[in-house]
Image 1 (spheres, one colour):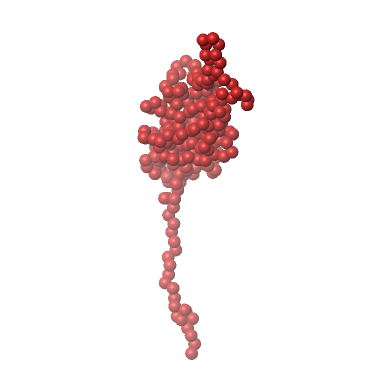
Image 2: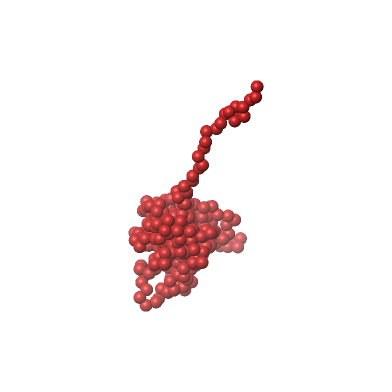
Length: 279
């Protein structure tokens, strides 16, 4: 073993042999923020609002999905005066009535898998009205809540359902990673049906003292605001670094509502008829 350029060896004292080693410890504590909000995060559908943006935030040591919402108007417009980031639920893991597995999920060595998905409604006439994390079969999943809407009237339905990804997935390997912020650049990985496992940073590069990947907390929203047809979370990183988990959105596709009308084309006159040649 080498320390600051000097050789460091195991030692013997009589019948005692001591070997230098490193151990990985999985221990909850005041400096270990490993909690994920599992409560649904919904737009104010009672006032005809839909999701228009998404970001990841941490509040009271709990990682939340936070949505931007706006009031839906006819023909897919959003009322700019109603756009806002919906405050996340203000609770702590020690509050009365708050339950592990119901209100929040605790990430540990045995339960550290996060599914990565870019989800969309089954029908083109549906919009996203909410998101949530759900813990199923030992995996943390991202889900979207969707509702039908009337395009011309701009009214959303009272009925909703959740969309989530499948179980068969490929692992995104994070090998011997340095801390993500040391990376000169990141490459987006939008591959379908993938997952990541939270792990430790490299023993050599960072003494395995950092949990990776990190979360990218930048807000993701369109300007001007628009309803969404897709939303998800994905991984971005570079080989040799821990990478980031970030949200992704796709705005509603208005192209199918375009009804272009072209003017009637009249038969072209022969030049000789239009300008007769004089003998």
